[in-house]
Length: 421
Length: 204
Ligand SMILES: Cc1cc2nc3c(=O)[nH]c(=O)nc-3n(C[C@H](O)[C@H](O)[C@H](O)COP(=O)(O)OP(=O)(O)OC[C@H]3O[C@@H](n4cnc5c(N)ncnc54)[C@H](O)[C@@H]3O)c2cc1C
Image (cartoon, rainbow over all chains, first blue to last red; front, top):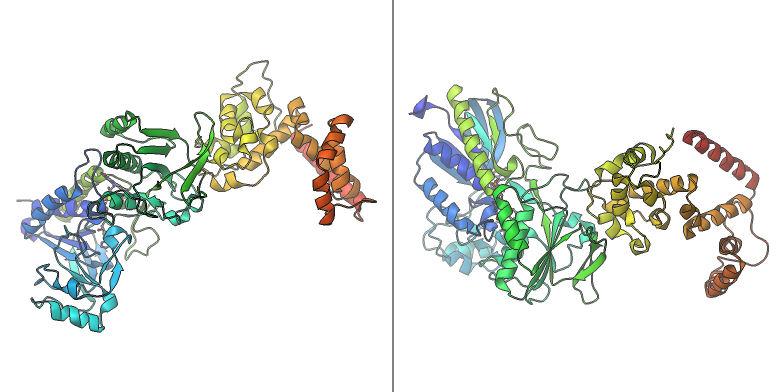
């Protein structure tokens, strides 16, 4: 039994992505009480919207499912979805955290039968598809949702549609009167695992993101996903044709002093994975990767070499200068090949901008002052008198395995903080 | 003050050249930020006219290829559109560097720098500015054409007649006496002073 045992202070984890889940589960399994807050209706964070993981091309749902089992089986772990931190006071060993919840309008009686969705008539943007599709205003976020519980979109509350939705539920699970709640919890340490958002490709004015066949890398994940907008077929958004000439543009707004000055570390591998998605689907597809330098660290280099050996995947050492609309509406990538000094203009079916990861806390007023670096990433741990820690991409641009490592490290640090408090 | 450019003593690779450029060329201090991505040369509307283009020229500077750099036509083809400066992910002021390198090449008397179209054009342009306080499209074109010799000048003038006619129609060019500004003398005094300051700063 750890020092202090069941009487020691609880630990709060903010953010239920792969990092927050890992930190929460590790802490709870070590015998500590944990409160996990997730602002969206489901756990999983960004990885639940990825098609597959590099370098093994396995499915994110697999690892997530194992973690959900660990959460279900652990009475020490209390989780709140649609919940975030509204305020923090106190110090290491004794923080009072004000939690704010947004109404889901569906309670625990929900069996996910889907009758409410059938009764709904209006559509809202589907966040799990990055808004590429819409879904009913009564929805299950996605097919592997955890918790497996529907959500009623606030846009229909107070309308006859909401009444119809409520009437359709056989289990009395719809609660249209649910309101925003706030309550306080006392914890000894806080792990911030608030993750990231894709850098906004609209800022890359030279890259014409407004063209239908110019997309970003998270949208590419959705195009390849069986539960995505195209049922997993990589098709041109403009006309639904198969995308067989594909350009992948690295460092789109990364390592760029006009945008994100840092390297997000995962985009090279993500694009190599995207090349693999395309080549898997179409034997006659050609993929061009435009890069400044390929950053495949450690064991990931083998995946890079594998793609390099594919004669239908071509690597161009060049940061494209511009993407323009060709005469037939196809995107044209322009630039200088830095090896040959050729100035090129090549047209494609689909162009994917490999945008980087921006901390989700950048540009927001946090409810508490945290140590952040120039880019808004939260410093892992400042000093021993502090009970605040960060994990996952909240801490810096990490892939999943590094996020999980950082989460385990944060869990251990948090345990030390409450034990020593 | 600009340090004198060190002698290369006939070496093809002069390892002191890059440092000299970093320290003495306008914007050169940012040149070490360049990561050779190619966004500049790819952005250049007339990049194909350039023998090297900015990215390669910057690599040549680093490699110490002083002679090849100062004989390049890249600097003189820059139209100062600033596409490269806007897009450079490392905020290298490409345009400034090219312009100042061009001036260095001129100052050091590189024949290539003096003979380029753009150098001749700039010279004719400046001649008109000093003489009339403004550009007289007709006379300064003539001056530019004549820098290639009389025979060549006649050919060039003939080839450009349709352009001249359109310019006249648009009242951008006229026949008769050139239009002078009032203070030509004062303008020349300003330019003389500027030249004097420039020379002083260059330590000549
Ligand atoms: C195109 C692309 C492809 C990728 N592919 C791979 C891959 O194949 N393999 C790999 O290893 N990595 C990959 N990555 C990287 C991977 O997505 C990240 O490593 C991973 O998502 C990090 O998880 P996280 O928990 O730190 O952050 P997130 O997934 O962003 O989770 C953060 C969670 O916190 C919640 N949250 C945010 N703010 C608050 C708040 N204030 N209160 C409460 N909750 C909050 C969010 O809703 C979210 O659920 C890819 C990245 C990109 C861009």
